[in-house]
Image (cartoon, rainbow, N blue to C red; front, side, top):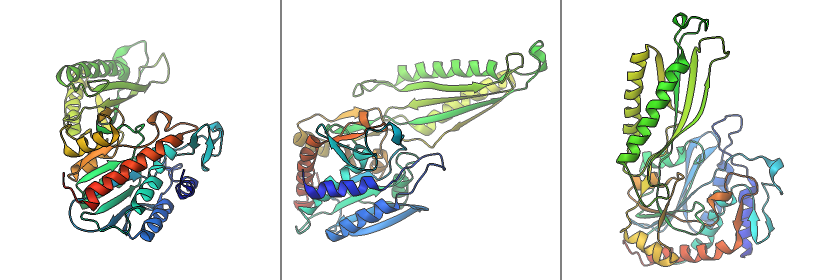
Amino acid sequence: MDKLFLQQLQQLVSLPSVSCTDPAIDQGNQAVIDLLASWLSQLGFSCEIMPIAKGKANLIATLGSGSGGLVLAGHTDTVPCDAQLWASDPFKVSERNGNLYGLGIADMKGFFPAVLNAAQAFSKSKLQAPLIIIATCDEESSMAGAKALVEVGKPQGRFAVIGEPTSLKPIRLHKGVMMERVRILGNSGHSSDPSLGNNALDAMTLVMSDLMAFRAEMQQKFRNDAFTIPYPTLNLGCIHGGDNPNRICGQCELQFDLRPLPNMDVDEIRQQIGQRLKRIALQKQIQIDYEPIFEGTPPAETPANSPFVKMVEKLTQSEAGSVAFGTEAPYFRQLGMDTIILGAGSIETAHQPNEYLPINNISPLLLWLKQLIHHYCVLGHAA
């Protein structure tokens, strides 16, 4: 394993960059962005640091000029961790059993030393199309970094590789992620006389029944056999309501998760659910409030016949598949790029103690990145 790769990985892992919806836990990523910018500047990249929020930023680093080219992209934030559950310090890279351990090492700080290693091989080359390195913030919480790129229309690459952990298997499509909240405000009263109140739990049973009916309708209407679970899913995740058995329930909250397929519109889904809930509210003469817990991540798909997909499949000797988890891919698709998700390590070890990166995953990824840079940037192929 390359000594510089390990040194850079150790430095990145040592810099805490947790993003979280809880402000008490949330951290910035500025130190990681500044470090990456310093390394890339030394390789001749022009670096633009894009402020997103206090202590949070994106990095757009460009080598070469012109239109098109290849984008290598990743997020610099990690999820929170329970350090006491780790067998080693999560903020130090530890090696054992053929693996490298550390917080975010697979998801996805380990991608950046690979990108730097691959880019260094071409730092003195004459490029026919630009090589663009993107590092974002807040992928694990709000996707604020990726959304900011769409807002400013940058970068203007033609092809993109997002280095999420995929066990070295190329991924061309994934489902969207929606997390929603339904609140019902009724009237409490003594349970001996139902007419004294309006039971929020009674109304919520109708809501849950209707959501399950909506789920069945979606699963009849939408199907994509590229996915292991070939239909959209809707999971009733948690419910809270009432305070005592002998009181009419005055308020109740349900939270659910919905995973739409590509070609399903998130806004349209929310509109349909909202209309159904309005009918229940009128029927029960009760207040029902419906809102997203977060804006959501759209589904993403790069067509199977894309020349870029075919190129990556040829290099990896693996057919591009699908995953159920969300990534920044839909935002790069909105920017007009054919996008593949390809990275070392497994999503199965991410977001949990003792996250690791198999050492034997590093060399294949480096080779493929170099081959892609040569094809799309040095030779300048546009397809």
